[in-house]
Image 1 (spheres, rainbow, N blue to C red):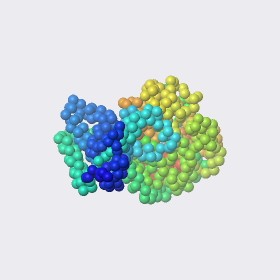
Image 2: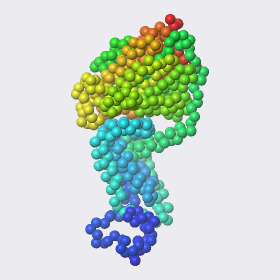
Image 3: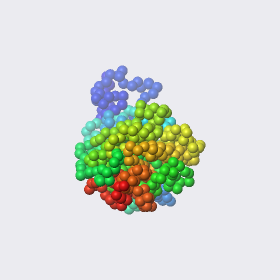
Image 4: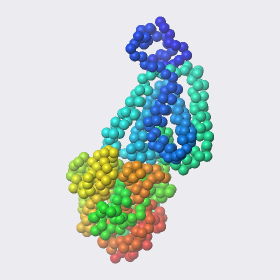
Length: 570
């Protein structure tokens, strides 16, 4: 019988619970074995993992740091040393038997995936991005799993995560852990602060003025983002929405309309203003709308750069400066106010869901059972929304607001957003691997999605124009824009402070039927006179109330684009 070495606790092939008991000689590793698992201490493992994360998962961080302190390698080294100590400190927090290696493996996997999206697409992992990930659909998630992402994560995430379970870990005995662990934490934190304070003025200025620097640091940025998201959701869980606009009533123009008034609100997806033909784009991506007497607002800004932020903001009475998820959850929104006024509201979704906007009213998802032809390729194109409008026009008997959440131009699989007949701009990018496509191909494919959105809106207008059962109006506004590779950025969801205008400028058009203009006394000519002014998502809440002639104290005439355009109904 041979005892184990006194004074150590092993976390490896020897279970933690058996690490201090006497073991039979036959149960121990053979000294003549061809291969024996190496044995290291937890500090050595932490240093190895920290080095790996800093070298292979922080390319974007080092590039940004080098650019900020260009020509000053001393500051790059000192700030880099501070970040190295911060990384080591983070790993040491979890240096506890049984918890240690699983957490390290998880951090490697997360950092690997984050690094791919940062380095290849310019995406920043922040709270809003985590919120987008948590609220995305299964279908959308599948589209993001490109072959290059899978290979990258397997090689730089899964493989090294598995390798950290190979060595046998030798932990100090408990009485030593009780003083060594806090001492190690204190020492690494002190070194972190020490390196930072060698020139705190310069480093703090760099962090303050270049917020994208630490937003690129892994795993710190992801840990912070997940923590902030968790806090946000915990705060929102027990919040009960405060009633809003309970004094809402139908105004005289609506009550005297003679027929049900229908306003169709198309909540667009990822359409950017720069590629919208009506806004002066070199290509005519909106030939249909150009001939249908729409009112176009070329200078429209979004509240956020992602659906999870912009869509709730659009339908709330909060301005983009005052918006927060907690505030949104804490009060009712446009749909509730319309309901208080006795107007029927329906939300139909061809995207990732209602983002809790319609949770008190309910919503319906478009699927292949609703329109097999529009869903023949697996996912439903927005042609299904035209079918929906056609059906509703035959059955509506009361004043209604129909909200249609489009799939629009959602990337990266732009080529799946339109039927083959709308592949007007070629060659296309028929893959989610942007590295395999030229900038021209990516732009061509994206422009085809705008062209198809134009077709959908034009068909909807034609259907409403051709009938005489309801008094129709239409409003289209995109939730956010999209980056197509400009300055190394792709897709959307960049933090608002650093987001380019391609992600924050969106199309915004309205169409008022001649019948609507006569019945409701709001003329397109009057609205046309306002198109030179900047508008934003702030206007949507109040403008829809104005279009439906809803009288309520929460309707702000300064944000209602129909204000000043009303006349006696004729």
